[in-house]
Amino acid sequence: MFEAISRSDSIAIARSFGEQRADSLFLNKENKNFKRGLFNIKEARLIVWRQLPFEYGDIFQPKTPAIDQRFFYVAIEMQVYREDQYFLNGNNYMLISTAAQSGQRIIVRFQHLPLDRLIRDGYGFGTLDEKTYSQRRWAFLN
Image 1 (cartoon, rainbow, N blue to C red):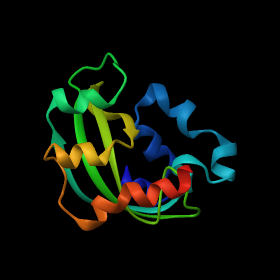
Image 2 (tube, helix red, strand yellow):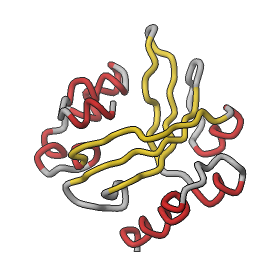
Image 3 (cartoon, rainbow, N blue to C red):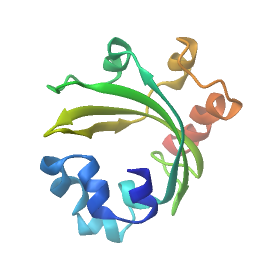
């Protein structure tokens, strides 16, 4: 997905989320024209990731009926058109939930999570940038 974002390949990005959700999520011309959501990202590069235990990752999302669901905590280096409450220039930290669908792994959710709790529970990456991310992001929420 991150390579597809950097190539501005909307179709490949959409496929990351599965065929059923692709149309509703990505073929929205208004979001594309106004650079909203994932269209706000110019470039994205996965820096580091960690698979979380199912029981831990499941805490952070609404219950969804998914087969073989897995949770990944990721650090993504991004360049965005406009910083906002969702994406900042530089490193961003998110939870990605995936599931098996039609023989491939798709993204079910791509969301922020309470980093202070994740770090406290021993799942953080241990970087200063990670520890200050929530503070940087709060500037756009308030």
